[in-house]
Length: 165
Image (cartoon, rainbow, N blue to C red; front, side):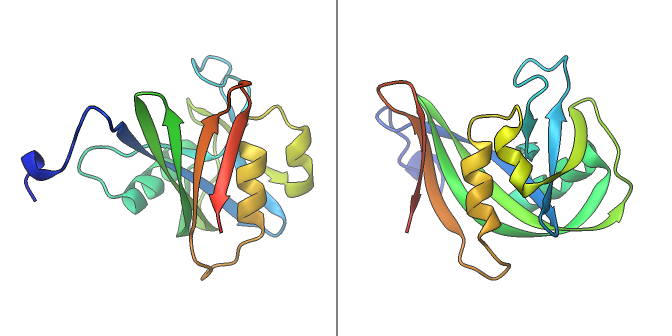
């Protein structure tokens, strides 16, 4: 379908595609502590990931981001998607999990990757949506149906992450 027939209208927000990767090893997850020099979320823990580049599919993007930020290769599977309401625009977040299959763990300009025990996550200085998102992933197994969710701030300014079913 050509771009002119895609139904883009001013009453709909545009979605920027991004990936988030959470490798698992037992009850530990690979997170990245953002570099102190980062503009967004300095020194905060987050999943690995980033923007989907033009011409990439989401799995290729996740594989590239993982390699760039950690030096690792992995067998990834799609856990779910989250629409992040950011006002006039939004983020389409594609969430992956998996296990490392090769490479050597290393830091990058994005930050320092660290294996973190799941029970430590609530006490970390982390981005707001990390604990509820990781809680959902932690209950999943490869082969489970992907989740669908949306993220937004309520009228009191609190982050809400709502999953369907």
